Image (cartoon, rainbow, N blue to C red):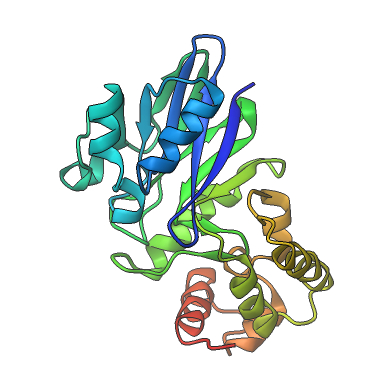
Length: 256
């Protein structure tokens, strides 16, 4: 099995070390900065061999060039956005498989947050690295894409097995949950989940990763088919992409 270590970075980012023990490979997913990554590598005695980028935002690629200079690692990133990935060596796109030692990641193009966003799914290890497309109880803001694009992207991810662990890139769960309750307050699973989220954050514990089954039951951006959410946004019976778009637009101005 892959060994996955979560590294807090900046104010609310999560960066992940992914170690493949059979061949001694270690990747870092979306290195926001350099020093915490090097410290975690040293603590585990691992050598960095790869960087896996999901998209070009600085808080996901900020450590690319320094880590490459320090370790000689190879940088893997989205073909659709290769011009904006510092130091990229290998390009991947939707439907590709990426061999990482004895393990394999399936690549999904998941535009919406940015036009060239990708996600990596290690199916054998039930691990999804989805950057800023899907969050615990949320999804990324639509900076460069449309609601239809983002709903198509999320639809790809919500079709994965329910036991998939969602390794998203930010600790946004508590604020996301407050919004989720505003559009689906009758969701008992969501109410219970938020009690646990509040407990964890009060103890300064992470709420990430989550399980995809949990997201399907509680994340409003995966639930545009919920009658309660449709009523909340005034789009009962509308196409799911339209309900999703209205929900995302409401989140953009939510101040709860």
